[in-house]
Amino acid sequence: MSEKVALVTGAARGIGLATTQLFIEQGWRVAMVDRDGDELHKASAGLNEASAFLHDVSIPEQVDDMVQSVHSSFGRIDAVVNNAGVADFGPIEETGFDRWRTVMATNLDGVFLVSRATVPALRQTRGAIVNIASISGLRASTLRVAYGTSKAAVIHLTKQQAAELGEYGIRANCVCPGPVRTKLAMAVHTPEIIAAYHDAIPLNRYGSEREIAEVITFLCSEKASYVTGQVIASDGGFESTGVGLPALRT
Image (tube, rainbow, N blue to C red; front, side):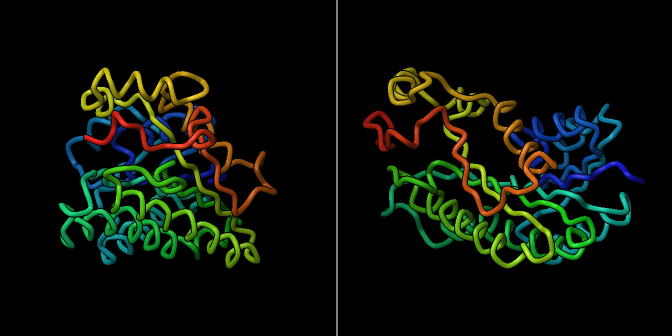
């Protein structure tokens, strides 16, 4: 079994699903991991080069079982895409500890747990880790005390991984998406917010899930064989111009 295998968390929708589909187009096989069984079943249906694994990456025991199952099914793991995340926005004074921990459990703990559990397999293949953070982890903004902090931690965790795992030939990089035209974003972003984003983004538009997936799969490929420890904002230039739009304050 010489085909490369990618493990993608949060693969049932959005960037995770787009990344799964692009990997398959590029000749990879994919282990699709998600905790939403119904969405995972629908997303994986018809994808012959993918297999679904129903697990919650915030639970250590489930992560260990998941990695063992993936390795048993495919025989190898060449890339890990830590995409699973929780988007929960609110003011600091309304963010209780339970809410804080819910965000951290998936966004940060999950990245740590999955990465740690897959190191033995990645050592065998001299593989790659790509963690999905956010421009909210690069620049502070309103309503993102838990979300933004979790993503900033993911950025530093990526650098730790690059520093410590490089001797095994394992590369670790981080992608920070900007505003992406997902179904959820379009449902919750008001026309005022959309217009404000367009004004603030140098490319004057939202990105697409496919565009983010292109960056992720590149970093997992041999084309990026000398790239590690890097943080790439795939955001239309938004991070370079700052965040904190007035339209996003309420």
